[in-house]
Image 1 (spheres, helix red, strand yellow):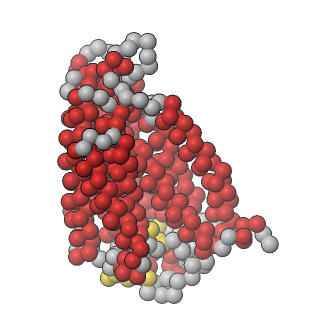
Image 2 (cartoon, rainbow, N blue to C red):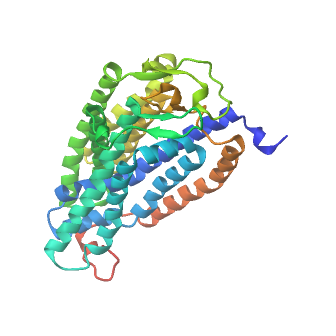
Image 3 (cartoon, one colour):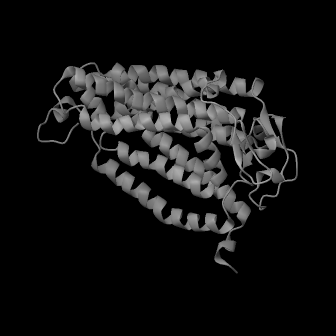
Length: 384
């Protein structure tokens, strides 16, 4: 027996669908609070010292947190090539906007304190705000468009991809609702981090804004679910599914008159995901009001886990539906790399992913503790 045949192709595809979700959730629960702190920066910190306190809560860890985004992109490229091709080419301008905003973040960290000029530092602080807010919004807008279907198709003759959408076409009402939910989710998470890591006025302001964000998460998540049930048509496969078949989306037939919430009726255990999304946000709100620190961050992570899992479970087995040609929609069963590629990648992931987690945990342990004004004003330290 060939080694990679130890695991069925169908099982490997399902494992990599789960791993893609793990990477997305890993990014959202780690770099998510970095984005949230950047978005909150002009509101929770009024003076230069207060802003330095907020910045230094994420300064030592943001680069490591961003590894999850890089690994997620690499995993998409290797495990789901058609998904990578369609999303990174079709959403090109949106991706460019995200990258531009993310590039502002390290530049802002490095340059804001190079001069004593208040105007200089204020401009870089707004750059850090853009670096937090813009990715938070666009990530949510992208998810909203995926749920509605993306305007692409495959040419049956040579499997070339044709994308017929536009950047401004992505900014539709439902996608913007999802974008606002994403911003609220990351603001809640960023506030939870500031309550844990900052002290004094910054933490108190973060507690207030985080409470509002948690309530916004509950309301926007509920509205998103209502619109998904009543106003957004889902997709369904209408032909026989060959879960171990070749990766060719055109071998199936699909329709755009489905219902995204069907999976919850078929598999009631999936309801755990949206319940966790609501309960996590509600618990984070109560923890913020009760001035709990560690619990607040954990509840915020739980809410993020529930919300992202809800999207994945609602769409399964679809990962990128096509609004132009439902048959071209990418699913777990027809958009993956080869059997041997997925197996080799799984072995590599089982070796290196625990190493990343262990190293990240060690860094957080070493850098544990609150950031206060005395810390950032200590000239012998390495504060931003």
